[in-house]
Amino acid sequence: TTILWNDRLVKEEEIHLSVEDRGYQFGDGIYEVIKIYSSLMFTVTEHIDRFYESADKIKLVIPYTKDVLHKMLYDLIEDNQIVDGHVYFQITRGSSPRAHAFPTTATEPVFIAYTVAGERPFEHFEQGVKAKFVEDIRWLRCDIKSLNLLGNVLAKETAQQAGCFEAVQHRGDIVTEGSSSNLYGIKDGVLYTHPTTNLILNGITRRVIMSLCVEIGLPVKEESFTTDQAVAMDEFFMSSTSAEVTPIIQIDDYKIGKGTPGEWTRKLQAAFEARIQ
Ligand code: PDD
Image (cartoon, rainbow, N blue to C red; front, side, top):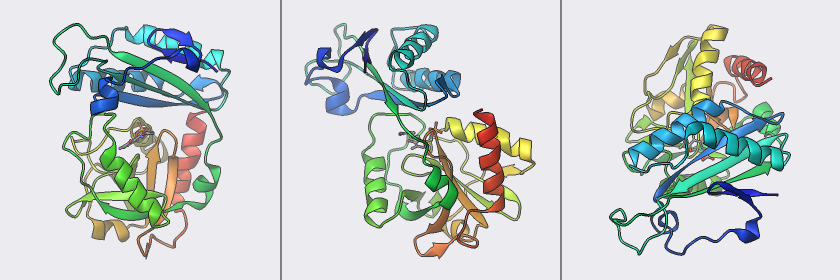
């Protein structure tokens, strides 16, 4: 398999990264994950656009155009003959003597992209997963797809230590998002999800789901809800590039609805399946 290192396709052994890479020392960079279905990148334009938006928000200038990046990712996937899986890519502010402030001398950003082949998590789609409430202790720019993921990592670890697949993070009593997913509740035929503020990532899968809701006739309210309201929902689910539409059937000790994936969730899954064909 090959890896995209800056603008070159290379073998992993050829890559050298600096110990003073700002991504390594400060998490000073951003990333994206794009799903590959039948050798094609799903919602690639949206992911590339968000990559440039995240870069802008941290004042990092990506040294390629969007079209060049798209072509490089395409070549990488073709080179590795990935049919189903994903491509991960990140860019850091580069290497420079360790100091918090941006480097003053010319520093090249460091870009890496690699592919992972893999099956979709069908068992989760079918059966749903359990989740755990975890206080959202992250910073106030969760809209940036930053390499700084410590808050997310700790939330996920707390959930998994408790035998749960995902964290339902909340700031005070307001439910924000999962550790690496967006969250949705359905009550009396209306879907609720946190608005796209600085407190959550504006998920690409979330945007797809918003359009699927129109398609299947499910009214949406982009309004936040509390932890008490969350456990009283008829249905609950999470979304991300890898989790797609994954039902959440229990949060802490509270069963959601009947404790099985709900009907609207099933309709969204079917509509999602049709969208990726
Ligand atoms: N995670 N919220 C957070 C905090 C995320 O990390 C992610 C994605 C999402 C969903 O975004 P999208 O639908 O664009 O994938 C929401 C990726 C998949 C990850 O970190 O692996």
